[in-house]
Length: 381
Image (cartoon, one colour):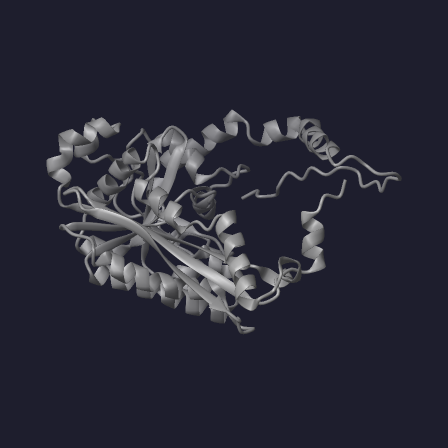
């Protein structure tokens, strides 16, 4: 598959005199306009139609044994037919007011989400520290629910401290306590992250193994409590085109999954159910399923979950839970929005933390940061 990028670069010319930084934007825009014909040729409607046609006529026959899986990539193989689907209960649900008509059917649904952030002052602060904060939100259709956050401060970090690892340890505690708050027969935990873990391929093997063990521990914990863990996220992945190419169907176009799904799905519909294959899930025995869900025009999310969740929940229930929560959120799951709000450490929070540490140490502000940091804050006009 032709994945060579279009590279737009200006002539390197070290000028004499002092240039206005404001000219950069003009230079970037001129670069794009200069090569507009090449861009239009690559992404022409003809090529897009070719990919859509291949999706309909080649993809239904894809199986993992027939794929050329060279490279560290992700592939999606359909596992339950190939038509787009929408649960009957959602056929006429498009806005919040419509939920009243189906409230009896979702009375035993409960949903939760958690999200995390951290702040570290880095090399310019007088000492090493990190602040973790995991925000959470939960509710059920019987009217119960709540939200809050769980912060943690670590001061004096050892050299081998890893925030990616430590935040998962922190989240495990929150996930366990939050799952116990969920009631009803159909319980869901919305996670703003990918469960296929392809992003971890750039890490060292030891770190990847530790991280995946922690993710598995959280997933297993939730499943043991009858809660379905759902990775819900926007993605720029090109897994569909890559899978088509691996069958021998060559294409010059690199088209994102969301661009394809925006064409083939109606609002409220989900794609076929796919099994995820990649170097990470294969090596560590992770059995991850996924589908795409169209929440609105050009609003396509990817949903991932462990296949063992289907032992106690239906794919339609997962679909319904996400879609009705997205309606509550105005186009994006409300649980994820609220958990993110509770997790964020804004500028005032971060500055306040550093001020308090300075106060505890009895140091004035001009001794807390390096001169390089102060120079960044001062005007250079």
